[in-house]
Structure formats: C-alpha cells, structure tokens
Image (tube, rainbow over all chains, first blue to last red; front, side, top):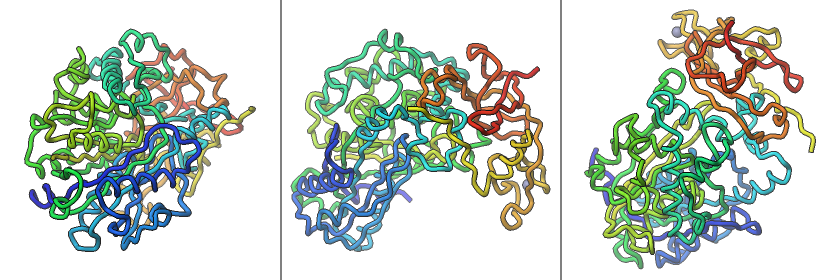
Length: 397
Length: 137
Ligand SMILES: [Zn+2]
C-alpha cells in the first residue's frame, strides 16, 4: 500500500491562536484561525471549496454541539463540510479524510479548523467550585459516583502501572515535565514561557492525584487552529513552502481494552506507527523532531517506548539527564507541548511541526529540520477505559 | 456552594447491574454458551451471537479480585468529595476476568498496593448504594 499517500498532499497554510480569549466564542476563534490559514496560503476565501470541523475534545469532555459552523461565518463557498472527532486525533483523521476528497476532485483546497474555550470554561468551573467532568461530560460517564471526576482520576493508572511493572520512578516523570517546560522557554506563545521548572520544584509539589502532581498535567487553553490542505501539484504555486504529508496512520485499542492488560503500559501506537513509517519510507532515526501527545507525562514516556526510541520499560531511564529537552539528544515537543505551551489537542504539535519545517520556529528552531512526527491520542471509550485511539502523521518539507 | 454526590449514570444497558446493586448483589454478564464473563455489557467475543445479548445473562459474580492499578485523590474536583479526601480510586481485576473501576475503602490509602486481594462491599453515598471494594478478610 506504500505510495498511496506519500508527499501527494501538502499543508499550504496555517492559522494559530493560542492563549486566553474570554470575549470570543469558540466558533469565532475557529473562523479566525481558518481565515488566517487561508490568508497564509496566499489564497482567497473564494478559492477554498472544502471544510472540515475538527472537534477538539480534551479531558474536559464533550464540546457543546454546534448550531452554526465556521464556513457559514466566514462565507466559504464550500462544496463539502463535515465534522471529525475522536479525542486527540481529529486533525490526523481529518487530513486523511480530506485527501480522498482532493483525490476525487470533490474539492481543490480543504480548510480544517478547530476552536476551543477550555481555558475560559475552566475559569467558570473554578468559580463554582466544581471543576469535575460531571459538569461537562455526557451522562453515561461511569466513574462519577466513585470520584472519577477528571482526566487525572484515571490517567494516573497509566503511571501507576508503569511504576509497578518496570520500577519507573516519580523523578523520571519529572524529567519529562522539566524537559518540555524547558522547550516552552523559547516559545513566546507558551503559557509557561518565562516560568521554567526544576526537578526539585517538581518533586516538592504536593500530589493532586497520586502519583501525579500539577506538573504532570497539561494546561488548558482558549484558541483556534486551522490548516489548508491541497494536492502537491497545486501546492507548488502557492505562497508558502509546502509541508508534505509523508505518512499517516491510526491505531485503535477499544477491542482489547478490558482483557489485554498490557494496554495500561502502552498506547495503540503499533498499527499507526507501522502504517505511517511504511508509507513515508523512513525510520525513527530519520526524524529531526517529534511532537508526542502529552496530556500527561506518562503518555510521553509510553510513546518513547512504543515508537522505539527505547525498549518497553526503559522509558524512565531514557528521559534522564535532559535527553528530550533543549540541547538533548532527541527534540521532543519543541513548542512546550500540551504540558507547558497550549492545549489544542494534537494540533498543538501539528502547528509546531509546520513552523519547524518552514524554518519559522525562532529560538527553538531545530537546525535543518526536514522530517517531523506528530502524534495524538484520546477518545476515552468508557471510564475507567483508557484513551483507546492513537494516530500519527509524518510531515516533511 | 453546597453540592451533592454525582449519581450513577443508569441506562438501558447497565440497569440490571444497578438493580442488583440495590439488592447488595454484584453481577456481571456471563455467556451461557462458553462461560466467558463481561463487564460492562458486551456481545460474546468467542463466537457468533444471538440477537442483542441473547446468549448472555447477568449472574452474581464472586465479588473477589485484585488491585490492578490505583491512585490517591488529594483534590476534590467536585466539592461533594471534600470530606472523603484522601480517597483511593482503583481498577480491580475481577476473579472472573473483567476490570472494574471503583473505590477501595476500609483501609488507609497508604496500605493499598497493586496485587492486593480485595472483595466487594456496598456503601451508601448520596442516597445511592455503590459497589466498592475493601481488603479481603
Ligand atoms: Zn460465549
């Protein structure tokens, strides 16, 4: 199947808004991101004939269902529009879907856009004193009466199992948090820009949900993100250096959640990784950087193992000594990630990969960046079911 | 702001489970054809199924298991749980096979460990009876 995707489609424009936007609706943020992406590509709104709504659904739960859509707000003359969700994999699944519309000639340029108001929603929740999932999550959520009230209420099982099976230490999760916070110091958009973290500060923090403290958890953000995708052929004539989709893959563990107990120390990486790397015809050593979905610290550690930077169980030792931070051996989450920069799901990493591959990453620019990996996961199927889906995309310039 | 405990989310699929809990019984779904146990409701994975859950029925389970993973909550994301802090939320690997998410009660959070033998207990919380687990013995 190799060759069906590789470098046949390209991201030609990007729009990014991240931070605090109390006075804007998520739909307006999404629309503005779409406008920015189209402008960035050097296109007019009238050129873009396809649109996909990327539903960001971080741990906070369901996003209110829309009664309006960003293409309507923007006046986009789209021939096709639909929504994609699935935890932190929406943009990757969305890109895959969009390629088919482009291939069939049902669209020439597809804009994929998302918006989120999770920061503002979290402030409102804090004022009421109730920041639990029960306020936002759908009725079917299993764990509420047992106090399973936030993503941390069950994601901690990942860390606890890894510690139990492999002797992974609290400090080693700290190494991940500190390294990614380090990257955030050279990203002016990062929520923790100007606020570095030391390992002793990490170790001194009181537990929130043991084994995690506040530094194991991602930030929440307001913002919007959009990309314009088109064929490689059309990409050549546009304003920006194209960022090619060299490979992509998805994995799903929901068929094994309850009986394959290994799912608590690994993510559904395998089929996603194999599909994407085979398509891109590269190996791990060819990557110049990677953005690994980092809703919590253990997810980063699992992926370092699952993608093969080290063996299963050895992630803790691997991250020691700042190996994934600035100046380290491998450049992981150079934006500061979801842990320290901003939380637009996996799109945090897609945005960063585009900047790196266009040479626009400023102080944190990876020298001669040619190929990058972005990953996403999520889609909690049933509490305390884990994030069962994983997706990845290999981008190159 | 005063607050009450979240109620169990009962739907068509898990109603028999919660009906049993009200009678202090811990039930899981078992396949009549091959004996496999499921929780929550599922079609049997081992063979073709009769319409809906035709070959499965809710049966009382042993109520025994081992702690597979656990955490200790030091923050009440919902103020209703403030007086319960610190509390343990755990994944129990039931003797029958399925995993079950619930609280560990009846011991200090510091005494909980992975692999520990636990058994079913029923506690009243916010007007509902809940299936939780405690140290075996
Ligand atoms: Zn059966």
